[in-house]
Length: 420
Image (cartoon, rainbow, N blue to C red; front, side, top):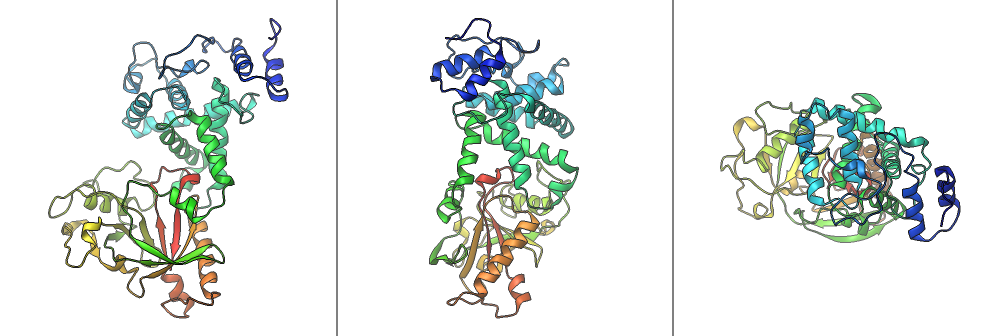
């Protein structure tokens, strides 16, 4: 039991420094919210139905009469700050129904981009405001029914993403740190729309994956199961320096220039300001949007291949177009898309590729470092040589970047590779 009238600071200190049974831990945390701000609800310790909002996260409920974020946005009284708070806490909640989270995020993404940015800015401010709270200052061993604890998890995840980003691409530099934080909050919200455990479980997963050795087994776990990828056999595994040699089977690609301008008549894309957005739009239109001679919509595949030397970006075509004599639909003349066999040239000199894998964001500086790491490893290897010969410039120009995840995947779930 706890003394009647105990100050929440004393309770919080007891949580941090004394072993307590789980039930008492949760009771003490809930009690600490009885002296909250006027905008907060008092804590109810009554049982809640499956899919309802957890005690302590009552602020995640939508306003009375609102069935979705669309209703929220339509209410003049719902400020950007209130919308940010509702969205953050709903998606952080481990008890909220997945359908409700999906609907809230879908409705949020449907509002105009300027309004989305305002709400995300408010979300960043709300996360930063939790830094002075004791409940937000550490990752607790159990998920607490606490708004401050949830915001603390957001803050640590956001800070780790800011610290991990190695690149200097426009999507990370345009608009400074505020734009970067906005984008990363959006990444976190997308991750939280599915699965169980809320933001506490997401922080635990991120910490666990960072502790793990970045092995090929871990990289395979990060590869989307539902997407087709080129077939290969590992012929030389665990080379010194963390790379391997693979023998690839034939596959075909659709390619275009990365630096194409975004077309007003092209398929809609959510982030038109991102680097290579024009190239992605052209390829997505051909593969996913049916903008080809047969008006065929194809399934997305992985990885996306990029060559710094040629400026090309390539999507792997579905496997039914990999075989000899298979004819993919012809691209539209104005699309700028070209079709290619032999992996778009990746397999022309040899079907054996040296591949070095890494996690995190594939920013320009990090990719350059990994390319040099692979080149040094191959040059120092006693069994394998670069198919293009000993010319260092030719070797560097032959390297491809392969990215297996969508742009909204957080760094601890990403699989990237450089291949020669």
